[in-house]
Image (tube, rainbow, N blue to C red; front, side, top):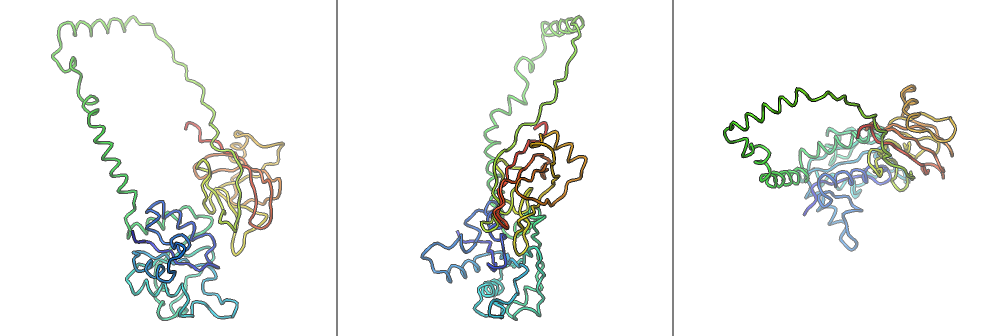
Length: 342
C-alpha cells in the first residue's frame, strides 16, 4: 500500500513534531499510509527514489515549519535556497504532482512569505496552515488529523462500520427475545391471570414499608502509580496522565518546557500547585489545594519538588521530582487517582 500522507520536515528545526505526527496519524490511518523517512525507508532501499515516490503517491503533505526553517546554516547560506535541499525538492515534487500541501507551524515559527521563498515553492507562502503549539499540542494534533481526514479517509471509520455490522448481526437472534412479549404475555389473559393480578395488588397493600439506605460514595480507585522519564533528546517530552499507563504526548498533563532547547528547572502541564506539607499529599489534600488555588500551567522544579497535578480528564494526583540530570532530562514519580464514580 502506497503512503497517502507525507511528513516533510527539517531535522534541526522540527524538534519532536515529526515523531508526534507520525505516531498519531498512524493510529488514525494506519502506519503504512503515513510516510516519515526514518520510519518508512528500509535499510538497503534507494533513499532518493523512496522519498520522491512517497511524495508523488501522497494525497497530503504536511510541511513542518519551525522557527529556524529559513535560517542560514553554518556556512551562512539558507539551505532552502539550494535546489538540491531535500525539503525544497519534496515541496517542488508535491506542488507539481497536485498533492495538497498543509504547512504545520510549530512553537515560535513565522509563516514564510512568498517573496522569502524560491520561486518553485513560493506557493507555500500562500498556503493556509495549522499551528502545533506545545501548550496545546493535544488539541492542535487533533485539528491536524481532522484536516487530513478531509483528504484521506480514516482507517477506523471502515473498521468501526464492520464491527457495528457484526454486532448488529450477532445481536439479531437476541433482539426478538428482548422486544417480543413472552408467550404467556402475548396470549389472551385468562381468568387465572386476572386473579393473579388482583392477588398481587392485595399483597402489595399489606406489604410493610421498608426504608432504603444510600451507600456511602466510594473512594476513587488508584489510576496509575509509577516513574516517568522526560528526555528531550529521546523525544520523551511529555505525557498524558489520562491513560494508564501514561501515553507520550508533548505538553500533555506533564511535560518539558522547550523552545530551541529544554529547560532544566521548569515543567509544563494542565494544572499544578506546589505542595509544601510533610511527605506526599493524599488525593483529598490535592483536591482541596487545587480548588483553593487555581492551578498554574508551569511549575518551577528542582530535585525533591512535590506538587499536586490535575489532568485534562479531571483526574487528580501528585508528583515528586526524583532527579534532574540536566536540561530536558528528569525523572518524576507520579501517582494519579481516577475520577469519582468511574
